[in-house]
Amino acid sequence: MTVKLLMTWDILPNREQEYFEFVISDFLPEIKQLGIRPVDAWYTMYGDQPQIMVSANSQSQSALNVAMATKEWQRLLDNLLNFVENFSYKVISAQTGFQL
Image (cartoon, rainbow, N blue to C red):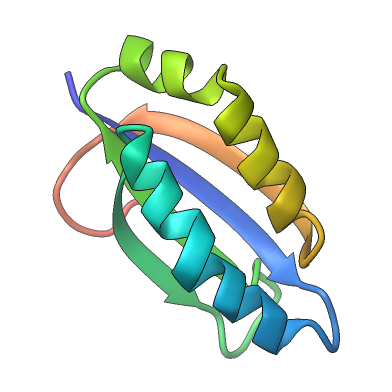
């Protein structure tokens, strides 16, 4: 069963340019190599919600667990945390359309 990884965070002040460069050139391509397929990215313009939400699919919970247990995943998260705060994630059953 396909699962969806929902990740949220806020970009650190004055780090926006570096953040976007990292996400486009490193984070997204490398999670694809781990078998995690980015599906959506949302930017909150207004309201008391996380600034960024990214959803990505994996073929199964076990495949996602394997990917998230790698040194590569940990390195990506460590690098992401240089640019963001309030990082959180959850895993849900993948369905079509927007999911929270």
